[in-house]
Image 1 (cartoon, rainbow, N blue to C red):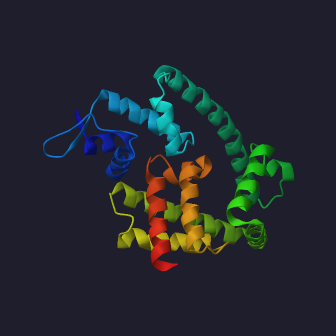
Image 2 (cartoon, one colour; image 1 turned 180 degrees about the horizontal axis):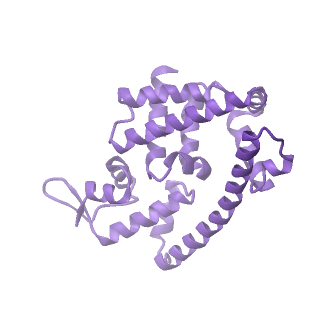
Image 3 (tube, one colour; image 1 turned 135 degrees about the vertical axis):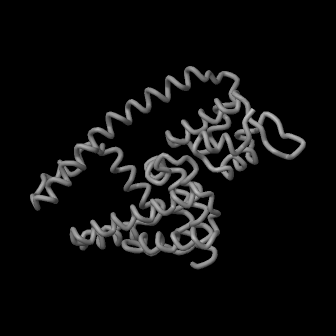
Length: 249
């Protein structure tokens, strides 16, 4: 049997995340000792693996429990399905990496790229879905304003904004790994910087900033960016954003 801290360390998630999974009935410990500690066995470890695979593939937490609890659920079939889905992502990511490399090369040489080359690897369906999601969430006027601002950015400005985001993301991950609380002074300082970064193109109010945090959790593209190999980090950031919105916006 493993303690909650041992499971959290092995899976790369926070103890807080496992407590949350327990509270919503998604992952119950095998037993709770007289000392109140949660203990997990092999069955729970395998279930957690499935949870994290489904999260990586973009499933909302609310949809995972019914899948795993379905009497017809077959772990082997599920693993084979995960493998097929991830292989498809690998092929798509290879195309995107090639597009990134070509774009980096053209920017370094100050050369122009063909318009269609800029978007190679991104399907028209995906682009349309992104556009629709953005307009549905922020509104068409906000999307147009963000696009207008972005078109006025110089190459140097774009590079600085990207570097700023990487620093903010690294700081979030470091604090998450250290077990910091989302409402702590250190985490809120990074969250305030993140709000400033978002405001380069769009200035969200409290409700919108909280909503953006939920997008980081529920949208697989955003989640892949903010989890960055640290399952549970997207939830951590979203919680910090909600606290910042309540306190400061």
